[in-house]
Image (cartoon, rainbow, N blue to C red; front, side, top):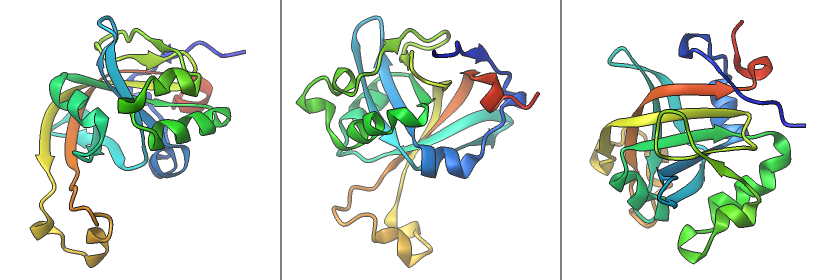
Length: 179
């Protein structure tokens, strides 16, 4: 039985930041749920924190990804975490392009309306973070200070970094609330 998500004040959010991104992965979705125009992709690089005294989520997207067009065209995005049993779904959403069909349905996930943004969240999620874009910057390889970075860009498809103000966090309070 899926436990309903409850609002978690951002100051009470408790996560293992590295594990959330690197091990658990997140599903990034941008677009407009009501219009049926959105796309999702699994992400493992990013951060959650404080910038300009604003709670933020920072994501990176390559220009070659189908979701790149959505995140550049729409003002909001969501990040969702899922129980381990959805790992296969997240793998599919991270490797298959939305250009080729309805990969969200194929993954067996149920998009739902978010509370504060147009981009959807998911019924199966155990954490959802709703964000409004406030800044972006394109990676410039001339500014890489460590030679290990360039090896990730054999196609020279440098990421766009996008900061989103966190407007709403909902989650399984047993897992994600600091109370």
